[in-house]
Length: 134
Ligand code: HEC
Image (cartoon, rainbow, N blue to C red):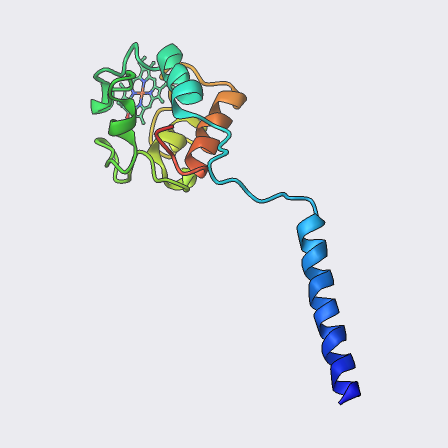
């Protein structure tokens, strides 16, 4: 009887100690709302500066602020078979393949120029983070 009590007590002690370290340890839980790239703050300004001179109309694609998001995410490209933006999958997104210099879908954008590596990466990262309207 005494032995069982001793074992029970050590189990209880072990449990309470492990709970204790759990509580005291550093709290570093992933925060799903802490996205790095914002569509409004980071992506739309790239379109404003480099794309909207041609893209209220060209390629049936309007990249002006009032329309860009709704014309991109999960929308079929007009000139290619594929979606303009597939959330989480830049490599399957016509928009990304149109700016990454790959030539997968004809001319690179912006037509006659190119985006900076930082801008290209922001668009890629925005898609990787789920292409949110944030
Ligand atoms: C000088 C004019 C011009 C500029 C600037 C321009 N584009 Fe284009 N874009 C076009 C034309 C013309 C087409 C249609 C031919 C083609 O698909 O290449 C097109 C097509 C596209 C398509 C394919 C649309 C579809 O559904 O078939 C995407 C995506 C695109 N552009 C993205 C962009 C982005 C992003 C920018 C800015 C970084 C940009 N373009 C800047 C002229 C332009």
